[in-house]
Amino acid sequence: MQRAETQLQAGEFDGLLEAMDEFARLNLDDLLPSVANPQRLVTASSWIPSVIERVHRRFGPHERRAVDEQIDALKHEALASNDVTSLERFLSVYSDHPLAVEVRSRLAERLVARGRFQQAELLLLQNRRSDHPFVAAEATRMLVDIWDRAGLAERIAALTPGDLNRVF
Image (cartoon, rainbow, N blue to C red; front, side, top):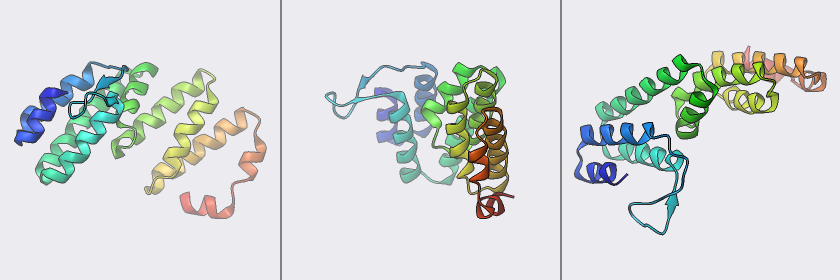
């Protein structure tokens, strides 16, 4: 964290990317003292998005694109593993990033296969709020399948024509 914060302050973008990548790959779930205030504890899932936000404010489109490319590479690693733990780890850090959509869908599929319907439902509800019609439609389709398998016909019936028109 210290290295990344130092690179960010110095405007050393390449060093920042490298430090963020190394930190993300540590897969830490523990609380760590913040660099700015050691009394404040942070997790990777809160610190990395804050760095990404600061990169977006401080650097130009070229650097923002490089951050997205790094996150995209990590996304592909998680998807290639097809492992629930790897998918969950990616989402624990990048869940609010637009590139997380595909990971949420894949994780939902894996969770359904394990009978963890409620967790899958929460992921799909997040995708359903997407501004991208295909993402929202696919999430709605997957939700209907889950609700059908779980015997929750009332949830399917609660979908209004407006809900369906918005996504289909």
